[in-house]
Length: 274
Image 1 (cartoon, one colour):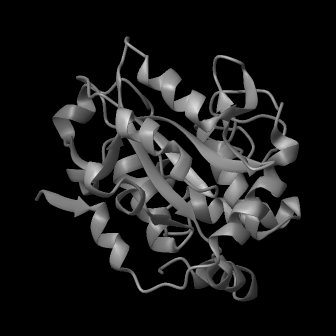
Image 2 (cartoon, rainbow, N blue to C red):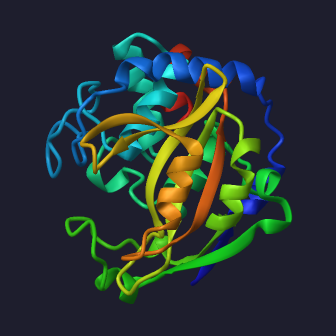
């Protein structure tokens, strides 16, 4: 049975929203020390099994683990406590820490789950307005068989569906750059190819320093975490030709204090089904 999931529908969730500038400032502060850290592809794992990399580390990042660790550190500054928040961000609500339950697929898993749990909020339509287009990302067993990523992950029929993603086209994003606030997760969306199970190829955080906005991201080219001026980041991606960039998708990071408090007060099982 094919299920269709519209990310825009999640905009209607009745959840409290923290004051964005406060979250943005804290997000910049807790990740400032990460600038200059080495880039390492998939530096986090389960500590055992298919991916034995550690469940928590701050000495190396790829683009997604930088964003995930930043959100965890926003809520808890002590590493051991941040690790528990990170587990809640990275894994499905079953509460099991396994390679198979990690939220690997951005459109099908990571985005809808982090919105549902309350760590981020869909804001692409808010900032893109009439410029926004909606993409459809189909996922089925045949497409999975032809995938070009995650060779060790087995197909789960529960993933089958058409996942819809609001996107600001890259040229429009360049025009709107000065209006984009700090405190956003910025996802780079590329043109679809045969074998793709996601169209998001990169992610980073929009931060503000000295009145100027940057994308703080784990950069493959520089092999480290860098702050790149937001406008320059967008212009550079607009010029890519090998796999052209369609546009950007935006999430606002939220203060998820209620869920995180439940995580520590009642244990991980208390929020597993939420």
